[in-house]
Length: 351
Image (tube, rainbow, N blue to C red):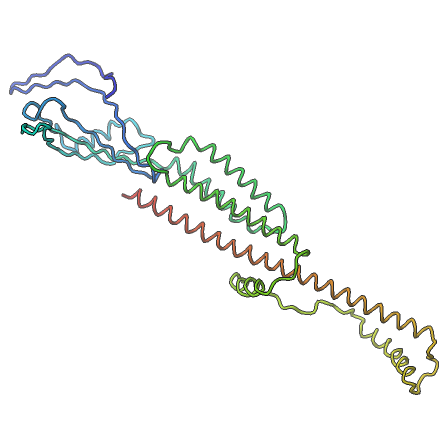
């Protein structure tokens, strides 16, 4: 008990039937052990016990002056705290405590009140939960940004920085007393961990897509596991590997023009009769041979370039498949975590 600051009433009321009423008000300051695991949807049960430490039941009997229902109605009408807490119910029970002396058969009278309070969660839902859900939703939709662009990683870093500042601001609204860690702290930790995991995934995918031109060819197990199995799973099937060398539209005309010269060269080598102006020392024939060698080297270079592009495209395809797969895992984990936490809060709030 704290110091009694209630006004002193120096009067005693005596009725005609011998009942004496001492209406001296007493201001009692008490404490209640809060269970804050389900904060801000917590329901508290506070116990108030009244008894005499000196007088036995033969000296003082403690009884209820009114019914508990009337006490509840009266308490709700005069309750001064209408902001954070809501008075739900008041229950009472009567006990007789035996004396510590074994030879003493005179017990103590004890009366207990159980006051059930429920926290008003609207303020915390608006200021804590809804902004967190908005931020995690923005982080979820940031997967739609192109991963090969650095804007996606910078956007996620800015989002994490903003969420950290948000947690520092709302730190004063969170409870600091209690025997357990509130579930809302776990909720905030999960949101922050998901944002950090999405940033690490973006860094990995960006490195894979940007540096794919310097990688070795895709290994066989990666091709089977990622390009075939995972690609089909996330609706990104592997593209068919076709010849990427596109012929010139006038290739047929070139073939028609070159064919007579080729026939001339064959006639000279075999000695067959034909156009006798194409002799072995003809400069046109030497120029034709040089042109053929240059065309062959160009074709080889184009083929190597196409093969390099094919390797880069394979690694880029691997990056896109992994990015979409992790996006699906991210969505499933967020949904599952939110459903579990909301179900726990809902069950606690309905009890």
